[in-house]
Length: 173
Image (cartoon, one colour):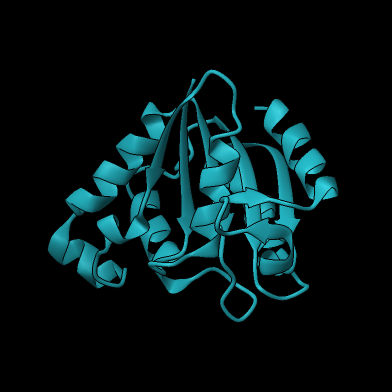
């Protein structure tokens, strides 16, 4: 199984990338590819830019990566209760290639933040809208208080209840 994982964040020290990477590596007998959405940076989407530029190569490459995966794991950072601008822009450009952005792939949607909310607002929005974009969301999980529940040095969750929930979620892929 080829698992594609990424954080919906352009932070170079993204805690969501750490979580997505950790989760992807828990999938048994899998080949894991971790993307950095910074590699897909494009001008801010608008209809005018689309007319001018067409479909940028970065959006085409991202769409192709999603299509080549057998399963997708995304961990969402939350900016003011919503998607990061970097992810939203990448998603908007990619959706213009094909509204079925996620190409019916089984998905695990995660989110985390340093605070107790665990980016649950953006996770709820992402999980709720994903089926409209051909996502087969198998599970979602918010990890609150990242630094209290994740050992950055060892790169793993330390909260046994969250580990159990994540393991159950991964088994659905």
